[in-house]
Length: 444
Image (cartoon, rainbow, N blue to C red; front, side):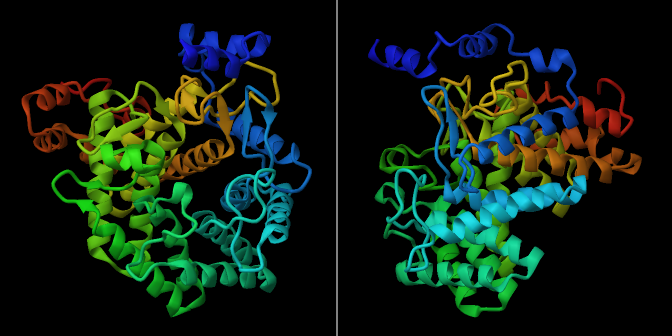
C-alpha cells in the first residue's frame, strides 16, 4: 500500500497531462502505431525533446531526466559526454550546424566540471561536484574523442588523456574498477567504460590505455558463465549480483562494451562471448514477444516492465552484429526492439518535458527510472533510429535468402526444449523487413 501511495505521489496524477500519459499507457498502448507515425517523425520528436533537455539547464550540459515529481533535473556530466557523438551524427545526416553548436556546449560544460585529478564527477551536477567516478569519466572520454576527431582541439584531447590517466591510477591490479565505483560494487558492465579506454588507446596510439583496457577485459571475461552465455556481476548492486539479475540497460552496456573493446584489441574470445550473450538476449526477446526489463542468468524475465533504454541499446548491438555477420535475424530482433520504444514514446502530449521523450520504463511507473524520462533513453533511441535507416538502406533483394524456410529451420535448431520449439513455430519476420526483401506476408 505504501509503495502504491509513493507511486501516485511520484506520478502527480492531479496534473492533467500526467494523467493522460498514464491512462494512455494502460488503455491505448498502440496509439502511436495506429496513428502511423513514420520513423522520421519519431526521430524528430526525440531530437526536439533532447534539445529541450539541454536548453533547460542553462549551463550547456544536458538535464539528466524529466521527473514527473519535480520536472527537469540538473546537468548530468556522464550522459552529456556520450550525447556529443549523437549531436555530431545529427549534424552530419541533417546537414545542420546547429547540432555542432550543441555538441560544443556539451564540451565546454564538461571541461568546466573536470576535477584536478583528471576525473569527472559522479551523478548530476546539482548533487555532486567533487566525488569522482571511473565509469562516468570513461563515458565522457568517448564524447571528448568524438569532439577532437571532429574539431582537432588539443585541449579536449588533453582532457581525455588526463581522465584516462586517472582511470589507470585507480584500476586494481586484477583489472577491476573498485575504487569510487557506483554503490561501491565492481561490475562487469564497466566494460562500457574500459571500451572507451581502448578507443582512446587506438585513437592516440598510447599503449598504456590499451593495456589497461586489456586488463579489464580479462577481468570481465573471468565472469562470463559459458553454460548460459551470461556475464555475471552485470547488475547495478550486490543484491542483483547475488540473484544473478540485471536490467536490459546494464546487460546491453556489458555486451556492447565487451564486443567493441574486443574488436579494438583483436580479442576473438571477447567477440565470441559478446556474440553469444547477444544471441541469448535475442532468443529471450523472441520467446517473450519483447525485451524484458530485467533478466536473470537463465535469460528469463524477472520484471513485468520494459527497460526502454535497454531496448534501444540491444537494437544497436544487433545491428552491429548484422554488419559483422550479415545474419538478418539480428535485424529482425533490432526492429522489434525499436518498435517497443516507439510504442512508449510520448507523442500525444504538448508538455515540453514529456512530448517526444522516452520513459525509463514501460509503463512509466516501472522500477527503472521510476516515473521519469532519462536523457540517455532518448540518446540511445535516436542512435538506434539513425542506425536502422542506415542498415535498412543497405539491404537489397539479394538478402532474401537469409530468411527463407531453410533459415527458419536453422533458427529452430538453436532452441533446445519443447516449449522453445513451440515458440519458434510462431516466429514472425518484421513487416518492414518483409517489405524490404519483397517477402510474402506469411511464411508457410
